[in-house]
Length: 224
Image 1 (spheres, rainbow, N blue to C red):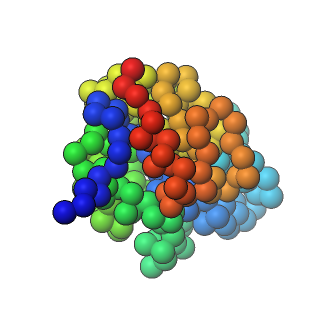
Image 2: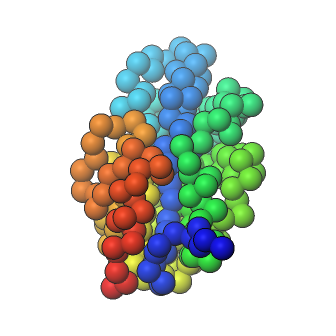
């Protein structure tokens, strides 16, 4: 029987971002932010430039002001995410990044983690709604670290929990903030071009998980 596993050197670990890497959710996040801010009477025309790769508390504070109480910030962030989940709803499975589900099935036996700035409720919604949770031995979200991306905290935490040295972790990212976080953690980076024509400071860029260059590159990466 043909071995359908990924050609990855034994000892390497794979770490995936969520939004833009597992699920192509950024357009719906943008629309949800616009609608939510409109309800508050706050102009949100530049929201796309503020949100990509960042944690909700940071985004909300930009609109609410630096003196807004933490509880108010958290409530607004949670309300926006409820709106996002309602809006993407039945289209969730159809919003997965092309072939990511098949790619994850081929990681069986490899150390695999999810590391995201997303809120826990969104992580649960996506992983349970798409039946992908089973492929991740470690799930690290933005609530578990003090500093969000572009700080390296989330990736260092995921690598440590996988038991893989940072230099032997390969991160899949789509945002400059996430790439900066992975680089600061000393990890290798594959850029997923979900919403960008090019990404800087990555080892490889691919349009999605169907790109044949991805498998070739993984097969060539050594344990360090």
